Image (tube, rainbow, N blue to C red):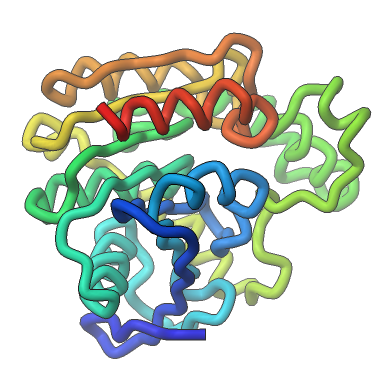
Length: 258
């Protein structure tokens, strides 16, 4: 698998599918490129799709340092440079949306259009998940905690007919140390002051029933980013892009074709 070299020397694994105008897909916290497997073909039918394994996940290096959302954005730029890609569309979901935001704010010449899915501005302005959600995810019964995570990602109807495996519940090969660093990177994210500087046309997408990253974050982003458009998917939870694929993928593709 090819690797790009990040500014600090870490090797960042990346993948390329399809053909056409380039589109960078950025996954959620503590996940690798497999996050996108359920919908990758939707985008590869129209675009040259680029994914990557964040440091600490997949086939990328797992150094001790460099775990922050701006740092992950710098890793993404290294991947684009290694592939000889200049200006690309960027679609980030969950923590990937936080990374995508820094990419657009700090490297405006590299982002043509921006899609931010199920994400948050972070910091004091972000709407945090409720204490009941935090308790459910932190319970010592690992099977119960995993079930709670699945129910935050997908509706009961979906879970009843889709027994898995699931691509959105974390990279099982990650070390505990890397997982902890990913959690800290996402928790410390605060791009509120940078949002007004984003120049790329932006689409904000969120499921109305998302409690993992509350849907109230979507209008905060849409109002803070100049000219941004917001689309809410009724009844969707955190993994809206997979369960509501028939709605979400055409929505994003239409925006990118804009």
